[in-house]
Image: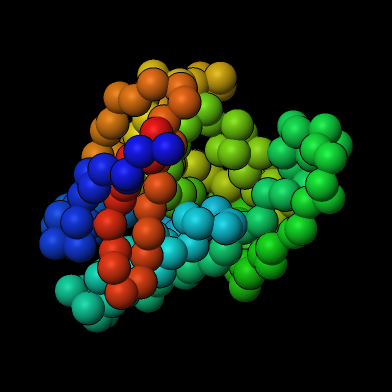
Length: 176
């Protein structure tokens, strides 16, 4: 296995997060009917960063934010040898008639997003659903899903893995 290649560093990630926030503001105005939902397990970190940036730059907005676990909605749920461990779902508001922004770190095959769409309907019937991703692996779709908000697009081969590392050493890396 070769050394991971850095694709985006902390400063580049911050610029991308700020851009994504401004795109959200352009499309959702005051967020009065919008809910931001991070997909478990890794989309919650980007969702939290988006929330923090919006609250910092637009303190008058009333943001509704939640986390959605899709473990038992996945199409490979019963095909794995190891049992899946569910994460928590945290939604304190009905999604009925709301504009939803699903947030995930990396869009690869689209299967997680398909599972999230199924899971959303257990919490109400949204008015609309948009998708925000930090990284779009454009050439690998199994499901015809396209994001509305994209931080960065990467074309990689199937055996390469894009990983987002959050925390003290934030970065996006490519592993072979």
